[in-house]
Length: 148
Length: 148
DNA sequence: TATTGTTATACTCTATAACTATA
DNA sequence: TATAGTTATAGAGTATAACAATA
Image (cartoon, rainbow over all chains, first blue to last red; front, side, top):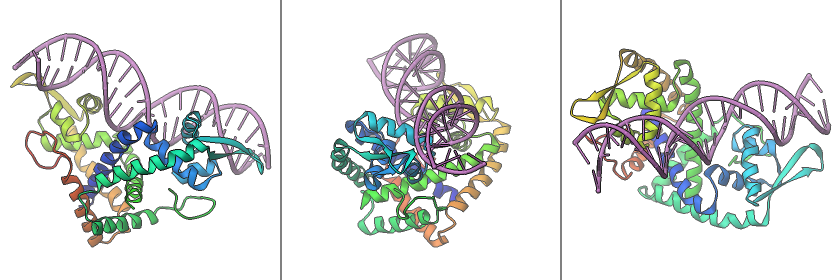
């Protein structure tokens, strides 16, 4: 029954999030902030609107995340020379430095959650979730590709 | 890479939750309230502590959920005859009535999210997520079995 | 001393609405 | 008139800490 599938999915995600909270806390980052920082590093420089689209949140929510990251000295906003309405967000040196630690921490957390699965099973799971992800209605990101 | 797996899992869960918000809104329920109501119906009567354990949240958070459900007239608290510290929670008639509508709505939401997967693929996904779920550190629920 | 539930409080995450500056 | 970003605000979902009543 699909609703049970939904439950399992949400349960796994809940556990995952909790794990991330614990593992990211020493870095002074929340899961959403860490995710935003990853996207910023990957696509920098990018406008607030585009960051929001990549994160699949409304622009106002992106403001909050970038505020926190900027206050932590991990990213910086600068005017977009091409459009005086826009701001471009990009990582600072400290932001780039945080990337390695974040990756390690995230890998460990995922490693632990998915430990009960064999490499082959993980690959299968990955494939199935990717199908679901690709079926998502398209966001209007500037250049296509992965959103996260 | 496992961290990408984690991303996909969280993305799917995010979409699922958003879907549930929309589909449950007409019933006047939030996803967490709906989940709590389902657990209550399934295991009633049950103590607040046990409800919290089933939901994998702290007792204080269960209080908030039951407050909302009680105010909506869907569940009721009554003293536990066996222990004057405890309260037993159980569904009202209205709560039981809500079950059918909730199930339909949940089934539709799940149906839509998992539409891109074949029946066989859904089964595979179910199996993999179940492995993850079973590996979860055991809660101390009164009678074993599914927690949700 | 431990357990049950609650009051009080706070924080993350995200949203809508209204506003400002620009295009 | 439409777009980019923000201020202001709200609500869901959860948590910790301190407390009262009971065991």
